[in-house]
Length: 113
Length: 117
Image 1 (cartoon, rainbow over the protein chains, first blue to last red):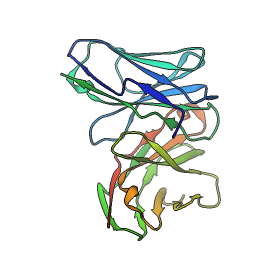
Image 2 (cartoon, one colour):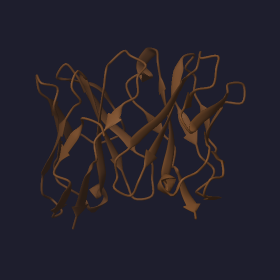
Image 3 (spheres, chains in turn brown, yellow):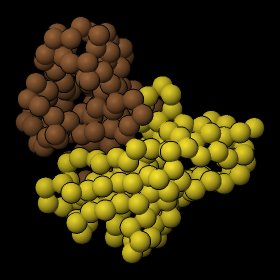
Image 4 (spheres, rainbow over the protein chains, first blue to last red):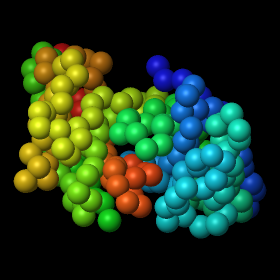
């Protein structure tokens, strides 16, 4: 079991609403990445945070935004929710510049109705 | 750009037998890492094994081994002595280790492994 925890585990929102997902990274890890995994697909990279700044971004619109805090925990915010945002959102923590695996949390399953 | 291809949507194996899950990749990076993750129905991605592009020997972790053929750009996962608990989705992923691509994992679409008793 990894030290990465995500909250909440499940969430139901209405189209047009806003949502905040949270992630606590593994102790000692300074980099947090977020991924979206639609049903039946592999995870897709949303963005990564290192030292509280966005360090890279995938092909996601600006309504997907994030934060990283001094303790390396992170938030993913999604505004103006759309039905297609329904997915499993995974957080992964790692050490930047090291060839190490990323440790994932158990994910937040978001359903937009 | 990086791309991972997993051509087997589903695989079946008898308990205690070995199984190979296929993965091919494409990248312009000279240095990269290849990963395999297991995702049970609970959703968590569980790290299994890692292979660096400059590692001369194939990686092994317990019952998992990675058959790395660099010239063919393949990184197949071999699971020996399958157990019922191995039933899950398996994802192959890669990350560039230089330049601007070293910040993200690129995943394939996955292979659903079912172990039969």
